Image (tube, rainbow, N blue to C red; front, top):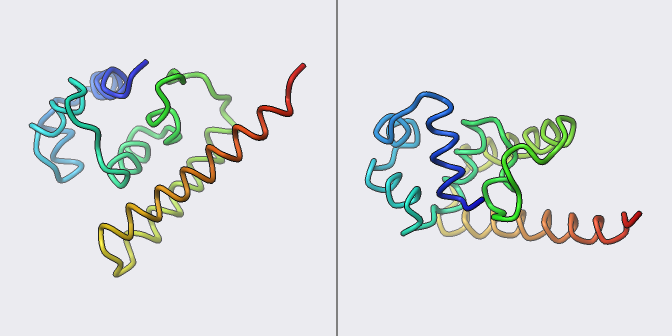
Length: 124
């Protein structure tokens, strides 16, 4: 499932309009429409905010090969705790948006790289 379809599903599941979701994220409702129609992909900080808002791990949003309910609950809770810490650190820091995006990209690259390596060794 693509990011746009996941976003629309989660928004509707939570009873939100595009304008309401945009307001919660402090972005325009046009941006939400562009995300849902896959004409634009959000910045990583918006992905983190969406994951926090919908209480799902960011990799579910980020990875088109992963559906919304594919991970077990313990892994979801662990990832949510990590994401909350990252959001808190970034929200309370004085670094630029560019540096925040760079930091988030590194974390995602490390996480996905680690997850891929770990999954390679779990072949039954």
